[in-house]
Length: 326
Length: 292
Image 1 (cartoon, rainbow over the protein chains, first blue to last red):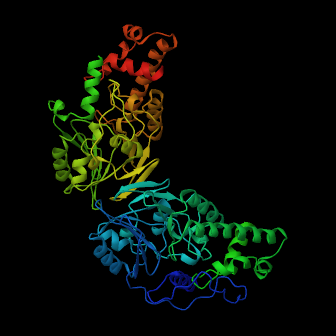
Image 2 (cartoon, chains in turn orange, yellow):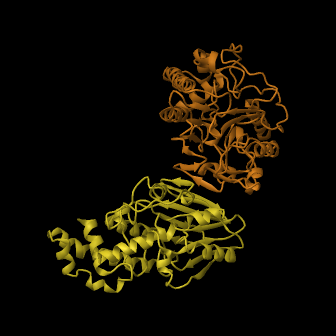
């Protein structure tokens, strides 16, 4: 049973990724017909083999780019002080990603920051570490990769990650990198959000923010409660992110296309609104089934319930309900 | 006295050649791949192993080639990670040479601010210290601390409150129970409390007490300057500082001028702590200015 759940989780997370052949879905795509209340959400079709390198590069200037492919979006800074990379996607596409980055950057990554521990963001750690990268992450990323803290539920890993995949430098109150003409600020999320080890990364001079999976553009969030994540954390962390951003900030989400401050604000408004809507039903004494059946997140489905994500409104309402009932 | 103090700070910041007559380096093997290089300037901590060489402090620019050679001899490789305990030239002076040799330099953010000149460090002559060239600047900075997980060890770097400067860190090798104090501990000699770099007399005493409280009777302590120490040695130093602060504070509270305070020789009972850089009078002056 556990294996089945883990497999379903793998598929679910993999489905989050854009594939090279995927048609980009517009934010205005109509919401799918509401399925019957279920949790966890239905398993999507199996993803394409995730062994291909990232397929698209978005040049953000000042040597910074967003790399889009399978798994989480990568952030790259290239310049005279060395190659700096945010996240490394899956173990299965690490080698081809590394080769493509090396080709693009004319050097191997020296600095690598994990936004969180999931295998679609930190799965390539071992490959990149063996190629010479020093891996930086929140302390809890290391604790979950080593299984010092056991992850439960959808992303549980029966065995620790290989030792070479473990971050070498960990922190709980942020670090700054001074590289390639940028101040690159790694900021611990103010509270557990997507997981209990999320980090935001802000390129101060270039005004580019990588949110990790605390933000996926125009999708309901994956609150990985088995990794310590909380829905309240999405409100706290996006509030913090919006203190950093300005109207011109380019935002690299954990998944999805490049976003703006207005997009991020819309997500924060959605998180707050969704929480209030579910809370109203909790206060009326509704059961989980009644709450989900009442479709409290309907107002946000047009923007956030599209096919790009794997968390539908029912799944998100369930997470909020369970958190409020704790 | 004033001229001496100025020349001390100048030497600390800049001039390795002035110190060429100091004793040559010796190394202490603490076991488990951890070594201390003691020579000119601050004590250098070295952790060796398959995950890379980790170094604490790098003394002067002029001593950097010899220290790098010594590290390669001990570790079989050059430094990969380097932490500055603070910005002074007798601890971070070798930064550019170590970075050139491949070291990734970590420090408290105020180390970067003072090396880059973003924040001026004022010498006893009232003049700002010159800034360092960019290759000497730390690349990774923190405000609270970072942990390294290397060579099957946890190495915890923690910022210290305003004390010796405003950007000091203490480094703990957790499993072998070893602490590098940076310049929070000058073993058996009067410490430098650099008020012009944001240091604080009372903060310095508190920082020493915090390290003392975190140590146990088996902890081996690498001081910023002086020989290897145990908790009891740190306690003696804390007692000295507590006593000297009380002796000088009495004059400050009585409204005595610095001149009158110096003339009263309040630190006479601790004269054995005086050394070539910090005389009784210069330490009296620091305490007076810091407590006033």
